[in-house]
Image 1 (cartoon, each protein chain N blue to C red):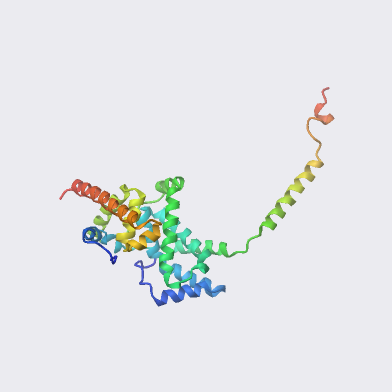
Image 2: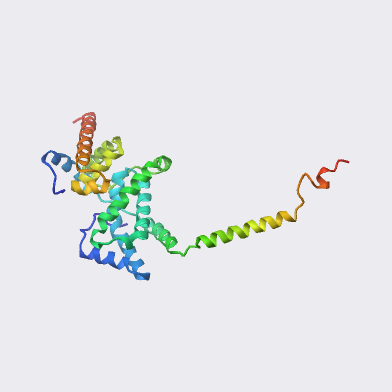
Length: 82
Length: 191
């Protein structure tokens, strides 16, 4: 009971007893799921440098790919009209 | 399944918290132990607060995760339960505010259930929950903190970041609103 409970609160406090005494069950799946999330949090993360490095590599790969592909619209193949 | 009522916070709990604040696998095992022993009351609190099992379980998971990541910052191991409750209260508030999440759970998850078997207690409990469901979240929150979690006014004001008079005023209004709804529910059910 709160130490500073006032007399006018007593009835309500007693009515809420059913919630205070309620038995809450937590399934094992709750703990299993949480354990997975905690394991994830424990795993070392790739830092910002690593993420940026990976993004830069991907961008370079894309640029290289497009550099070898003829630009559309300007190439003779696209503008050729027999 | 785990047993539910919160054990009294004491030196044993404090020792586990200190162990969890250490390092390595021993700390992680100690934290797992805390999850095992403290989850029933935490989930029970969140279910009273949110009125929805799925949402409450999600809030409890997020609370534990946040606690895990910031446990080192907790200076007094003895204050663990209050600290955890504070994280849970904020997490619940934020989760509740996210309407999208709430609606998703409302369609997917069953409403709060409890131990089946104590018929009369369940009827009384259902009546109270039905009334809480009709209140605004701010009123529900303060009633749960006061009459379910047994907190003093100064603890509530710290928890909710309110001044002393605002806390008293909100509690009084919440009480009045609850009583009005409760009378309607009891009248509707008849003798």
